[in-house]
Length: 92
Image (cartoon, rainbow, N blue to C red; front, side, top):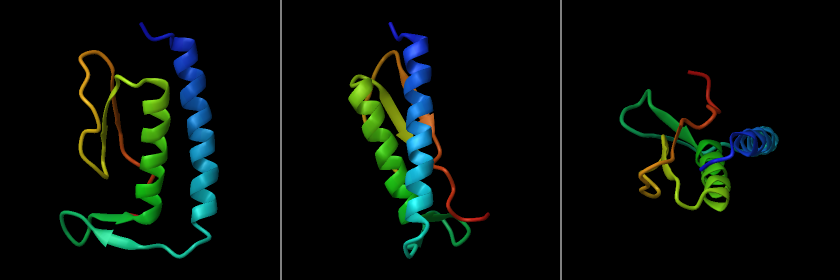
């Protein structure tokens, strides 16, 4: 059973750290690619941020199922699922 208070602490910490990392990465050159069409963009910041968040989730909740916008399912689980879209680094 997941401890909701601990979950809240984890997610809050991860998002604060994620924000700091994204802001720092935005000082570096962006690599922009298209996904499904020319209006569906992804940057190196998007991918890096998603990998950071996946790593945090996997470390704290190794049996979690994770589906992210910038990649395929990371793991299958019956009970806990995480769905997220990376924080956009491009104005849409």
